[in-house]
Amino acid sequence: MIKNTSYKVQSDVNTEEERLYYQIEEGAYVTTSSGVWTVQDGAWRKIYPSAGEGSGLGWARYDDGTYTSSNKLSLSSGVEVTLTNDASNVVTSHSGVQYYNGTTNKILAEYENDVYIMTAAFKASAANANSTFLQLNLEAGNGTPYDRIKFDIPFPKGNDVEHSEHHIFQYYADSSFVANGSSLKITAVGGSAEVWDIIFFIQKTQSYA
Image (cartoon, rainbow, N blue to C red; front, side, top):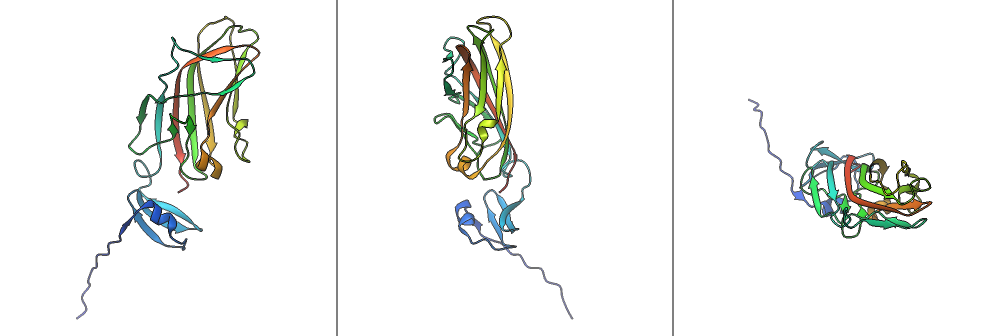
């Protein structure tokens, strides 16, 4: 008589550091705290969970508490500066999400070839609206021209009149972005300007890992 018998196989739960240390072998399976991984086409692929917490996807909102209507960021004509955000208030889709560092003012990426969408919202005014506009861009990468992701922001007529700005960037991460981060740069062109009430919203839309 032949009987069917079932067997339970349980793999160890490894750390992410251990997974990345392992030799890449096609078809390998590894379980970590973030999910189940396999090697396909010479790279690690997460096969579970595929969405939500643990998938590597998510979103985060960072509100600046330094530059307000009573303490505005002053921009001198022709001088590029970092659009800073101290992340005094942070809201995320779930724990573990970290797409920006309010201490270093660096935009972060987890893995090479990840894709993100970033929204920068703020208020701005210019002393001479007729001759002044703002340039907003990511800083130049190490070989990747992130600085081409740029907006020219004109001011409608009205000197020192408050205007609300909302601009969206889509970008991917190269190896330098993952290692060093990036930052958002702003320049007043043709005259001085002021910026305040800065909010960053960053969504990770594709995870390469």
